[in-house]
Length: 261
Image 1: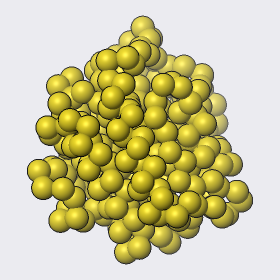
Image 2: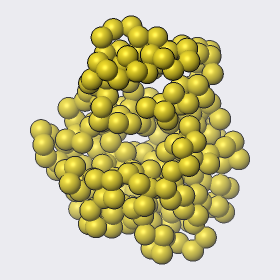
Image 3: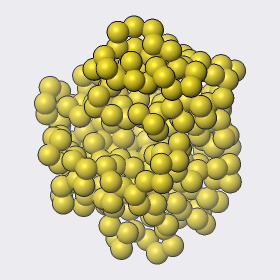
Image 4: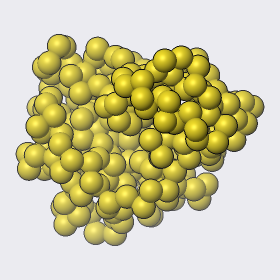
């Protein structure tokens, strides 16, 4: 059984500032990120995983200390610029996906670090629903018929996960308010993550997949010049001073556009 883990840093226990979540991540934030990923890996192996691939999905993709992970875990560091991005290397040979340290999306008030893809973006909508990095890549996983089994992160993101699929196992390691977060103890976070991963993997085979025949991507940029610039991307049109739109029946085209922003 192959398990794929995608990890970000803004939804890790205790992380609340951009100074901690810069392109390299602060040493303490990277250490906690590594520990939460390690907890997921240990639980996945104990639940029957035979192969685990981890994607370091934050900043330069150089945050996770590979030596701290169980022997046998493979780690994707850096960025190839493939459109799968935070799910680099995922395919239909995997039995499940685990998301660690994910965060609320742009336009949300439930994390001081809320954003989607890039801080130059006001919001991203897919089929008229405001999207986060979780929903963008969970939709990719579903298109490959691979279930998302466990998600951890801030409370606002976790409530979005429940709306997306209440069958996904969840852990809210922090709750954002204003410019602050309330976090559970890091060791308790790792314990909860282990339990959620175990339960999530046990439910593989029971998950339903959400797919659409058509996809409409709408992006609102903070700077109107970005909307003008990206309106020249193939099949993209400008629909407002700050907004562009892309319609397609191929979800890969959505991801292709996003990786060029």
